[in-house]
Length: 101
Image 1: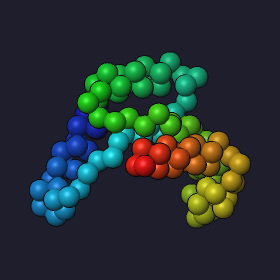
Image 2: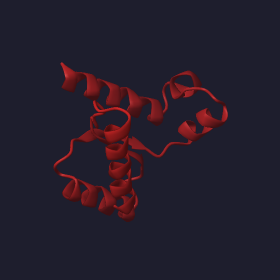
Image 3: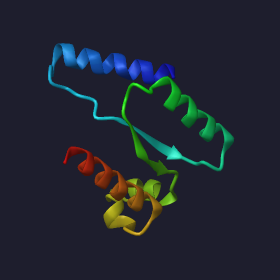
Image 4: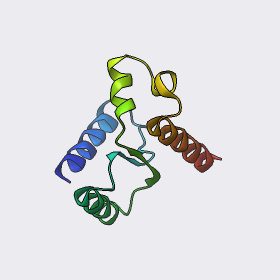
C-alpha cells in the first residue's frame, strides 16, 4: 500500500503544479492471478483500504501475450486480439464507457 500512497502523493503534486483539472477516474488492478492466495489477499486489502475510490470491476489478468506484445512493440489487439489480455482491456473499455454514459 506504500506504493499506492506514493502514487497519490505524486498525483496531488501534478494537480497542484501542472494540471489543476487532473482527475483519477479509478483504480485498475493489473497482473492479477487469482490462483495465488497473495493476489486474492491483496485484492481484498485494496478494496478495504481504498473503498472511497472507484475500483474498476474489470481486472487485467496476468497474460503471456501482453508481455510478448510489448517485446514485439505492438498493441495487444494487433498482436493477439483473442488473448485474455485483449479481452480484459476490451472489457475495461466497455466498463469505462458505460460509466461515462
